[in-house]
Length: 106
Length: 106
DNA sequence: CACTCACTTGCCAAATTGGAAAGTAAGTGC
DNA sequence: GCACTTACTTTCCAATTTGGCAAGTGAGTG
Image 1 (cartoon, each protein chain N blue to C red):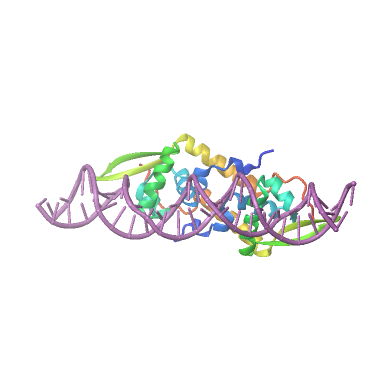
Image 2: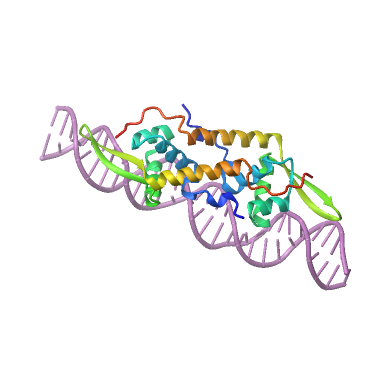
């Protein structure tokens, strides 16, 4: 008898991180700047959130060189993809009111 | 060029309130205790969140009498239902990665 | 050598949340 | 009539979280 809310992933739930993870879920990997621009967030904020996601094991950070410039490539790990999928599933369950027992109808 | 994250409703996004609103969205109205039990939250916490939802204009609180005992009936307002629906829509848009432009593929 | 790029980190200050416990308003039992 | 229970409500408080701003770092450019 657990409410699906218990299956929401706190790391993923925050709007900014949800957006970051969702953006990464749609591709294999993306550059820092690309994510920053699509999610519309500052460098500082993204950097911090990426650290959080990395510590959670959801994102892998890869320093690469494009042309001659340094770039940071971000990608979801396998666990990150799984966690995102489960989070979205829980969200859907809650949203569709699947755990309701017997309302009153007052 | 707004990220759908901007359309997430902060009042509704918090896990507890999302669960409360979702529970109410599935019915016409429900008693305080029913919501408290399905969402698995303390009286105190629910009371506080209901106040927040009421101030936002999303929930209507109705004191009723069942038998001889006082009960509190909760129901989403029209705006509450609309806001919930739009929030869920935004969530879906983000989750499906609809706003991606051109990832790098690094 | 000064300057730009691409982030990263430190330092806050504001806002949110929940638990514990006291408070309130009615109704119930003896 | 008085003590007790029900059904919430409110207060106090302490832990987190988050973002902005600004300084910092390391590599590349003219």
